[in-house]
Length: 243
Ligand code: SF4
Image (cartoon, rainbow, N blue to C red; front, side):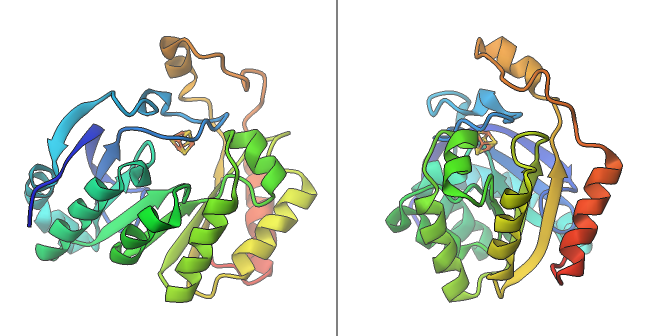
């Protein structure tokens, strides 16, 4: 198979939060969204980062095969937005599969269906970051429309792809009752949902915004209290949602 070149921001080994087991986490460069709470704004520019080939990435990941396999882990492709480099992403997944490695794709789902679907079909697990279930709020939080994401989600439902939904709870932005109800309806509609991860907003990326010279709008937003997060999780759990 021909080797594809792409741009990556960085690689982390031994990740424990981006999919099952221990993960070899590849942060791809480039993202078309502008989430207000993004903690990786340094991944936005497609021209940033460094160039690697898909074969180089999979060879590097292969060095960690033992701990990936014994922990039930694998490779996680994240970013940035991996579907912003769909050919590169697809090639990494295929090459990883040739070596028998599990691949999770962590994505906002924002990409034209024609480009995204091969990647969504090929990956073993999709970690779909739903920024907001309502179209208006989605536009406000991310700067982009949500309909391409909905199209890709419908595709994932049709093919029964194992799915984790992730959602960041930002006080005063994504935690209104009507928006949480919309999220509940959305996750209830996914038969192949394995897990919902409700993630508390944090400001660890704020310094990066300053370094990039981009105004950060959430300086005065508090992080959600632990009790608020556990109440929320209980509320979804009572509705039969796996957490
Ligand atoms: S999709 Fe991810 S990388 Fe892109 S802006 Fe949103 S949080 Fe940041």
